[in-house]
Structures are given as structure tokens and as C-alpha cells.
Image 1: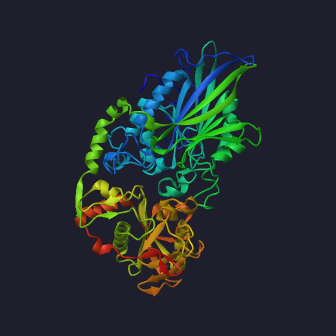
Image 2 (image 1 turned 120 degrees about the horizontal axis):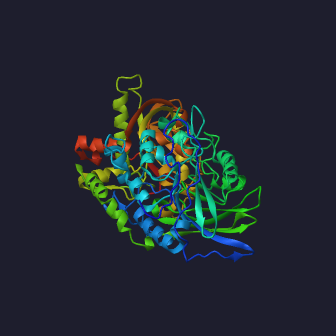
Image 3 (image 1 turned 60 degrees about the vertical axis):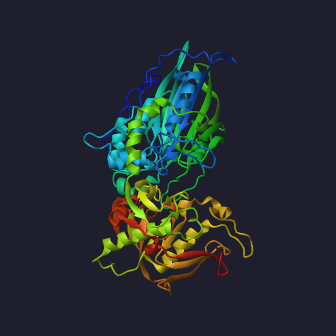
Length: 604
């Protein structure tokens, strides 16, 4: 553990249904004050400067490494990733500001996202009798995190694994709005509180409230239904912030795994807003700053006026995967026997400006090498190369491959049932435009790169009318382009900010998408077996659990009857298929299921 971490009492969160709310104050830090930020008289009060650092959406990134390409991470913007880079920035800031006046927080989505994280959840899980320590726990403990909010992806591998991770962390995992379903008491610690030593003066008491995402109830229903409930962020902040102030908190910071838009990706399925950080700032008095997560956006500083007090609350969100580090600078003055926050500002630092911390890379070197060896195992061959580069606007064999395996898996599962004779369709999305299957030898990382999320497979019973509505909703992804206008593929997709993973294509039927027509009226020539698809036709749709649970707010499927569900990740189903078949041959499954048109004429 890093030597400059402050300690706190009641560090271990409850592992049962309830939680004794012992959010006690930490002992004061004992290190001496840094000479770089002296206290002084400010308008008659003693000044103290506190620094709060923050990360979010780390998604299992420790090294600046891409396990899917087996190379150092890179992107078009020159970003780097990983906790090893963040550690270097944190050490520099602690040296500059003083470790005793510098806190380090995270806003969730920590243990899912890379093959490194996956390996220690599924291949060599930390829940085993002699299970290893999770690499994210190792790295975050060494860096010296003080507290972390839970993200929705913390629940992807089930509650037992999350509890094992929690036990391995030297800092609390916070979620004031994750409640035990039976008792409605907090299932995790709601907050963390500490005293920061002020030389020659009273300590500054800092409280951190953790809030997670109510969408967990939908996206990970299989893991949490009947066990936990997730009320709204505003509702729980209204309960806890006054309590923290009454306990003497001079500074209140919220670490929220929730974006700022005020919108939800699942529409009206739950009464609580998914991206509610701005609403919390506006409606809940007594908050000084909010570390924002979940949306994978970069917000250096956003000021939101609280409706009740008229005071500004500063929000900041560092970019995902350790690409940025948020720095909150909080200035306090001592007046009439109390510390008062006079000013808060924030900025983000780019992790590509520093080298990796050798302490962190060395600490996890063995785990990293083990995972690199695992993902480079050869599991089969491919007769030709397949790329996802054009998948967002053109029917490509690589997406057909995913749909082929999913449909084949569902057909086998339904064999011998009353649904065995129904047509089986399949949905898939392009999760990464850089995903590719090479000609020749195919490795685990090649196949895993096609499906970067831990989704599982379901079969839902839908009608022709529901499928048409589903496809219309998906086709909103394209920018409306009139006949005769030039078509630039780079500018054709992601209309209204819709991400690639929320554009689904469906195999087993054929259809046109008229990009000259308005959204909602784009699907034409929808056919099954060459014949127009009837509205009352019964179909089986192979669909991932995220979409089936309402992720992306696609219509029809969440209410459709579930015929079958698998506990295995789709990624593993793809890998197992290649192992069993030995060969990926596009001539077996590639077919032109859909195309973009304008007034009946193909765009490409």
C-alpha cells in the first residue's frame, strides 16, 4: 500500500443484507503541511487549500495496452490509458500539494472492460478458494485511493464477485442508492468521511457520498432482482447530504456514476433518471463538487447553480479508461469557528503527458503477461480476412458471423420445443470498428474483439410488426441524406449522438433502410424468405441481455416473451464455436441481409 494514504475507521463494508451506518470520521492525518500551499489570512479568515483527484470508468485498464490488438494502446486522438499512467500524475500532484491535503476518488465501472479484468472474473476468478487478488484492487490499493463509487458494470459478474473485490480493496466502495431489497437498508457504505489535518488549526472534515446508477436494476436484473433495489440519485442525495452536514462535514463531495444529461437510455422503464448528476447539483443543497461518471464524456469544469441556495456546484468528468485525471481545487477559509468553502474549480490532466509508473506496471507484470498469453491462444483458422471497419453502414461478413453463431445457438436450444419450427432471427451491433478476423490462424483475442461487452444471449418471441418497429428505431442512427446529395460514410452515422453499439442489424430477414426518408419511416422491403413479412408473423429473435432488458430503449423486445436464456457470455459462445468448428468460412454464413438506399436505389 502506498505510504501516503490516510487511514479511516469502519473501512470494511457490510457483506450481508444490511449495514451498520458507522460512517465514522477518520483519524487526522499526521503528516506535516506542505510548503507549497501555506495557510494565511484571507479577509480575516485562515485559508486552507484542499485537492481532490478523481478518475472514472477505468474499465479494467491498468497498463497502456490493448489486449485485442496485442499492442500498446493508441487512438486517433493520441490518448493513453491505464492506472499506471494515472499513478504518475497522482504522485506528482501529491508531491506538489502535499499528500495530507490530497484525496483520490473514483466514480465507478472498475472491474469490467478489458481481458485483464475478464480473466480474473471468469478464467481465474477472485472468488475461488485460493483466488488471486483482482488486478484493479492491487493497482488502486498501491496508488492509494480513498473511496470509489460503484458503477453499473461492477454488477456484471454477479454480487459474489463484487463482494470479493470489495474485500480486497483497502478503500470503501460507496453506493447510497444500492439498497437491500428486503430491508431497504444500504447494501454498501453510503459515504466515507475523513479529517484532513490543518497545521495550527482545526481539522477540515470531508465527506464523500457515493451514488450509483438505477439502470443496474434493468441491465443486471439476473444478478440483482429480489436482492437489491436502486432508487433515484436525487432522492438518496436529499436524504444523505443533510445528514453529512449535520455530522460536521465542512466539504461534501458526491462521486456519482451518472452522467449530466438528465436523460435515460431506457426511457420510462424505471421512474429514476439514469444520467442525473446535474439534477443532483440543482436540487440538493449542500454539495460542493460532483465527480461524474458513466457517460464516457470529458468535462473539465461545469458549474450548476443550486435552486435552493443559489450557490454554484462544480461538476467534472475525466475521460474513460484512465485517459484523464480530474483535479478539484477547493479553497476554504475559517470564519466564526467554521470552515467554509469559498471557491471550487476543476480541470483535467491528460495521462498521455506522463510515463507509466513502474511501481504499478511491475506490481501487475505477472498478471499482465498471463493474460497476454491467454488471449493469444490459437483456437482455429479463417479462410479469409473479415473487418468491421465498414460495418456501421454496410452489411459485412464479420457481423454476419456473430449473428450466425447466435442464431445457431438459439436453434439448438429450442430444438424439440413448441418453438422449434419458428424462424430464428438474430441482432448484433458493431462494438468496435477496429475489430477484425485475420486470414489464417485465429486467436482468442481476435474473436473476443468482436464482442467487447459481457452480454449473454436470450431468445424472445416477437411479431413482424414488433420487428419492423425495432428496425425503425435502430435506423435513426443514420443522418438523413436527400437523393443526389453526396454521401460521406464518416458523416453518415451516429445521428443525434447515437453510438455504434446502439445500431442493431438483424439477420434472417432482408430489408432496405431509406436514408432519404425521415426517421421512423425508413424500413422498406422487409422480407422473410423472399416474401413480405406479415405483421402477425411469429419470430424468434436471438438478442443480447442488455437489449432484452431495455438497454438502448429499443421497443418491443423487453416486453416480449422470453423463450430461453443463457448464462454464458456471447463472447465465450463465439470462442467455443470457433474451437469446435476449427474454421471460420464466410461463404457458409455471409449474406446480404440489409442495405442503405435512397428512393429504392442502393447508396453503396
